[in-house]
Image (tube, rainbow, N blue to C red; front, side, top):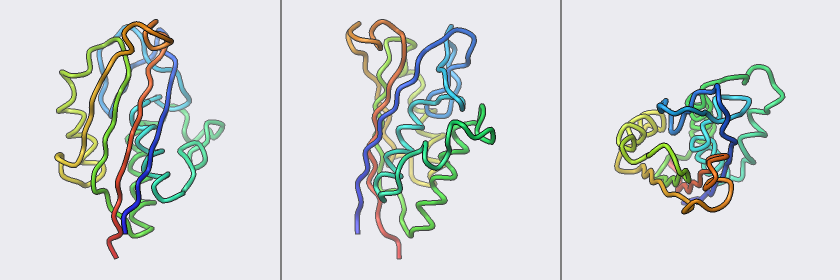
Length: 159
């Protein structure tokens, strides 16, 4: 049996925060605001994975009013989501992530992002797609007020 999930997340860019995307720290003058490290791409991915199995969303499992998750590394959240998926008897077939940001340039970091995510999800790097786009200076992303990410996942029953 196969299950498809879709996720979306957005965070505001603010000075004085580190910028984390797909589990790696990027050099940028602003970072994403959030209760955790605000890795918008991993958050969208977690929602896609959870959604595939109708397990609600990342905020349900890791609420932003819980001090245990204050400034937590989103790679830890993804690892926990993978445990939930495995506990239901599923594995990743593939995932596809799109990051929407004017700056910084994402493409030079994609190989490292794929490596980090595939290791956490215990899947081949060929099963992980990370892409980036801009919004051609339109909207909050175009004004560099924030970054958004979309993700899709396909899971397969293992037992």
